[in-house]
Amino acid sequence: MRDGHGRRIDYMRISLTDRCNLRCIYCMPAEGIVQVPHDRILRLSEIERLVRIAAQMGVERIRLTGGEPLVRRGVVDLVAAIASTPGIKDVSLTTNGILLPRYAADLKQAGLRRVNISLDTLDAAQYRQVTRGGDITSALAGIESSLEAGFSPVKVNAVAVRSLDQDFWAFARLSVERPLHVRFIEYMPVGDSSGVCGCGWGPEEVVSCEEIRDRINRRALAEGVEGLLPAGGGPEGAGPARYYEFPGAQGTVGFISPLSRHFCGECNRIRVTSMGKIRPCLFSDEEIDVREALRCGSDDAVREVLARAMRMKPGEHGNPNSAHATSTNMNQIGG
Image 1: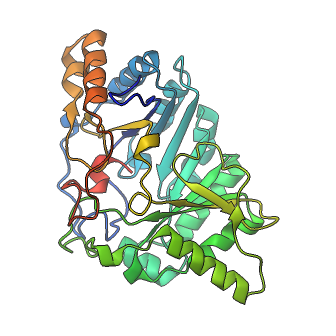
Image 2 (image 1 turned 90 degrees about the vertical axis):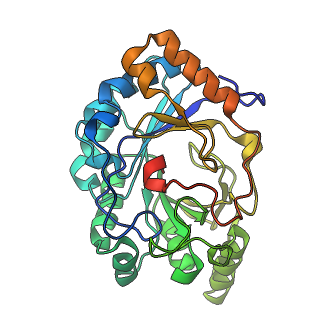
């Protein structure tokens, strides 16, 4: 598939659920969300069909997201079905890691190749604050389970929020002695910007990737360690991140900069929400419904919806530095 700007679209991110076992302050309200009725969520068989049709049109990589995708029943069987779909070369997962000790081995056997684990702090007290009660030992056990299961690469994603005052140096050091690929992501204006969620987006909360890298290098110098150098190549599925590494490190340190350094010209993805809405661009509320075609239409009808989504995909996103770029929370879109 190619969009209206000539970009090849070969990557689809599919949200399995808007539900989660954590309540992160920049993702959803403390009381949780109004749960979408089951009949409005894409059935697993519908997801399998969508993947099959998308693969016929040129999609090669699938990432399963949430909410927290591992709270969705049947996820292991879904991974196996997607991994066996002709044309699909890679199946990956974004998770908070809490349930990985239970599912990692089965997911690997089913055909999952890679995992991204969302972890915004290494401080236990701060983790409880950010997740509203989460236990960091569970998330760290998820990382260990991923390595033990043989996933490669294992990426750790940290959203940088200035008021959290995260220890970026501690994160970066994870890449030295373990084959972990730590990635810092600039805080994006997705969803509620009023502060209702506990950490409302505002330009003052953004820490640019350049500042993060400078802070890591200054700390490295203070510790007598050589700073980050451009990596010879990023891990598989590197996407828009720019990668660096410490000399002799087993892993890398990546930086994803949707605000300070746009990468729209390289965009190769579309997102599908758990309710069957295709979002051509993360920084836009524009959606197109594919659920109806999956439930009532032919394969050609589904193809036409995908083709329309390609035509809708903008050449670049709007102004992400406004109060908020979308009115939909990230748990509803899919990470």
